[in-house]
Length: 125
Image 1 (cartoon, helix red, strand yellow):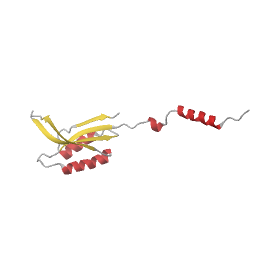
Image 2 (spheres, one colour):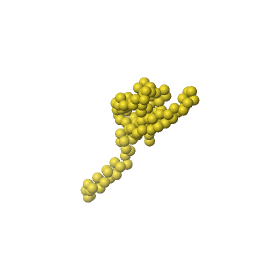
Image 3 (tube, one colour):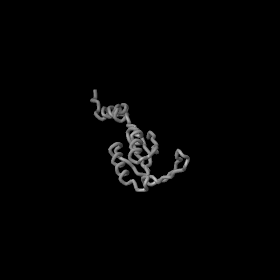
Image 4 (cartoon, helix red, strand yellow):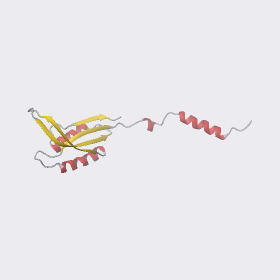
């Protein structure tokens, strides 16, 4: 009887490994949530919100691990009195492994004196 060639045995073993299910570390993916929101560029007195924006960046670094500033934006909304209000804003895009929009809204209300922060969240795919 001839000895079984090592190359054939190795080939069979490698094919067997290819048929195994992927390791659990690769099968599980982490959820990611996208948070899109704006903050006013100026406060009620007309002063730029530089300090508040700087503090917001620090908060986002600690809470979500980072942030992206998409830039200046302008928007409008209807107040409770029916008047059209217009704002100049700074738009942010933040991803995080969890939805932290409730905390974020609370932070924005407190630090930017916003009545109802504009925050949109969706699950990334």
